[in-house]
Length: 214
Image 1: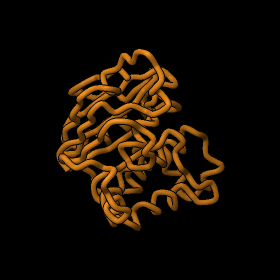
Image 2: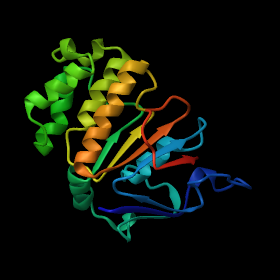
Image 3: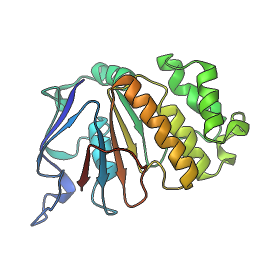
Image 4: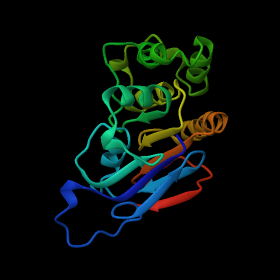
């Protein structure tokens, strides 16, 4: 996939508002593979909704979203499964971590489907992010910041044309945030992937091609 094209897209819940001032909503916007985007937003302006729309998780929006010229509303379930396995990676704000599983098992849920990373590569991610001693710890016992790092590692365990990260470092210290930025850049450049990050203030410092206000 090379492009994501939003045409007059707007959450249905915003439809009754008199005026929308946004670089994304109600605009003609094309996001390109290989480019880095930061979407800055105030709370309640629809950043998590945007990620869910792009991932096909929700459809409660007006307007059109196209992947390479095709309206995503026309995609079948099987096509979405293929996209989420081969083209689209996401880190949800609420993480979607399974508390009863270990940190490593949470990552393997994704990697078993894709076979994208070797065990030594995954363990190297844990090491670089300072949670090597947490691989066999139940996720329920981890802090939210540690869980964010686990969810981030899981996001990298698949081939991607685009990576969506919704407030990925909200509970991460600056040092680990910088490490996440380096890992993300390395993986994105290796795959030629586009990166779309949302933030309500604290964000990963990357060389963004474009900063958009939601």
